[in-house]
Length: 150
DNA sequence: TCTGTTATTGCGC
DNA sequence: GCGCAATAACAGA
Image (cartoon, helix red, strand yellow):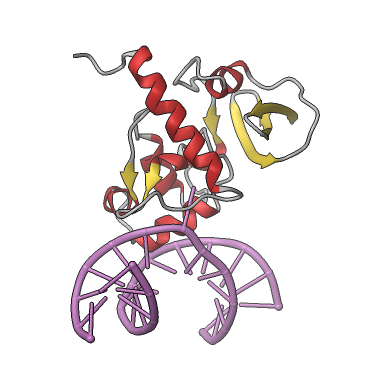
């Protein structure tokens, strides 16, 4: 198992992985930067939208809330869905989606920041600013990446 | 088992 | 707008 730290704005992103499986991602204010997988670094600097071939341990069958995490993984870069939308896809309750997001072991790889509430942005742990920054970054980058063919 | 936890939603003032 | 009830799933005791 390997660990590494990457910068995102004022935050440090701590990554734990082995091979192509991401086990844990967490945020902190301090930490010495070190090697993290290429895709993570590229994504955080706004240079790519894909984590492939990296995968989160959370979408493994049998992992708690894996069905919900899989549904969240299908949200495209730069767009959002509500907690209700995810609940419908994963065939569960919207309140349960909230619990799953809070306990998400690997934010970013499971793009939980793309899940917003019906009447606002929803929440984020440890700091809502991270969610706002990620959404803003994705929204701006979508223009130049051009996934959406017009 | 039972309890606490939870990043929501919609209805009635 | 605000308060509040409904409500699912998991961890920990």
